[in-house]
Amino acid sequence: MRKTLFTVIAMATISGCVTETYRPRNYAELVISDNYNFFKSRRIAVLPFIVSGEKENTRYTESDKLSTKLMKMGFTVVERTLLEQVFSELKLSLTGAISPDKLKQIGGMLSVDLIVFGTLEMGYAPARGTGEGWGQGAYYFLTSVSVRMVDVTTGEVMVSAYCDKDRIPYGRNMIEEIAESIRRDLIDFDGKKKDE
Image (cartoon, rainbow, N blue to C red):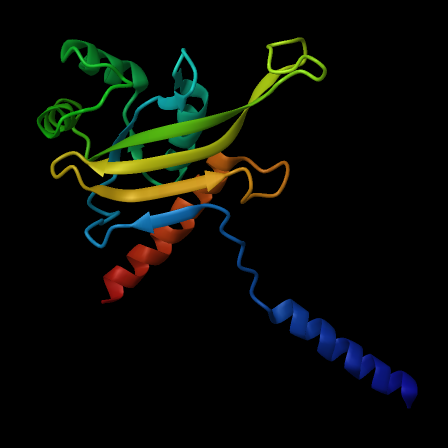
């Protein structure tokens, strides 16, 4: 009798655990404009990310990672060399501010709906025993990532995402967390908008 009762309790407990839906945690903070429509704004250009506090202040690795993730979500991403040609033709810097008129011009020349801007904040860890100097063993590390998807016709920020090193568990990647939050929340967001 005890064995049967134990088996029933164990099965009830296990079945309760199995039927529970797993919802991954969002480690990135994400805001989506009410005016954004994923099904109309899918062609994008991703600028190289600006790195604050460094002389060489653009990074392609992180923006390329995000481009790949966005492509997996169904966005059409313009090739970086085409983007660089347009910026060169318009005599613009990839790291400079862009006026609304230039934003529209870039959008028209590239046939894109959105331009993705990103900023990386870097931290510095000095070498041990060397004070503030750049001794052997000192290094920079990524402390936060900010991403904005801007509509080229209106200049409105349609999607804004932020993640910092204190929000994510050790070993997780901030760019991947932002991409995952965009994927998850855009699917939920657009599903809700279509039902309204």
